[in-house]
Image (cartoon, rainbow, N blue to C red; front, side, top):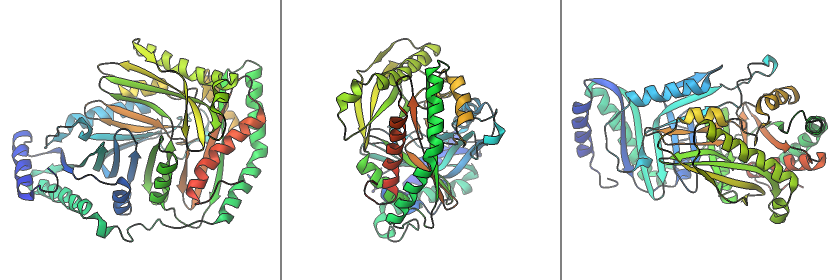
Length: 470
């Protein structure tokens, strides 16, 4: 069911299934297998045709492009994981699939982006992003291994509106198949940046360092006094840019330079785009396999990895995360797990200590797991609630979507969520970079500042087409 698919047969089969499954109206989903595609080319083709889009690409696993919204909910306030669970259950209960897919990768998916915290206790730092954004995409282009599918979701009333939906997916299918001739001048996000912008970034970094040193020193004091065992403190740099971004080109460079990371985009509209390449998968669940990832402890890839494996400070920071993840599994009554050996994994210019935790479970509620896991000591600290309070006190900005969960859940309950780090937010002709470091006993101010700078530079140079700033 690829290039040789006949529209008349496709239409007839869907009408036949509609008559069996739907009385007259309902929320329906239609899927068609398509030839193997380059996600970057397809995203470039459609990025400006839809206000909302999302991009998710892994080198090993499911990747997708989501375009437009079929059903969605946006929440400002508490109980975001409970609201997400309710939205997920209701929509998958009502969604009627009119085509049969032999591969589970092609299943319908709902995508999610949360804020780092609900910020309910600090009105001065109320976030400018919602606590929750949950979307059943109207159009979903899925890629896994060498297989690709195109899916469309919509509410139909009778066969007349159903036919319009079928014609729409068929039109998109043909555009993808014939994408070569349509890609010319398809993206208005293209531009190039020169070295003065890099100079502006470095100036902004130096200006922010004075306050950052005070914040990091306070974090070190909190740990040394035993008030906290760990705290992750972040810095934000905001720059004004006159040009729009060549988002697809940035994603290509991120893939080339950080192939182990997951490239992600959450484009609310042309003036508000979150993007990056996250090295940290919070968890993934493909029945019955559940995998959690502990990623903490940092070094430049130009350094000797043995140094990181022998660093008392970094091992301590990493072990807080490992133990926290294990505790979360136990809270979820999952006790049959095993740990991988600790190793150093590189993501472009940066390498981290990594431990994977594996388990086999028949089913999980991904939102209950998210509620337990987030925020982990990798991006927050320990004890968690106390560390959160100090982050709100010490950081001069709301984290928004920085270090927040982003991911998907499919119709069968499989799920995957990353942490939105190692990226940036383009908003109203400004671009925001946020990066942090974990402070434990043994942390040294200068080294924490250097780590944050390294993380900034790893994403900045991918955006500004420049060599590594000195």
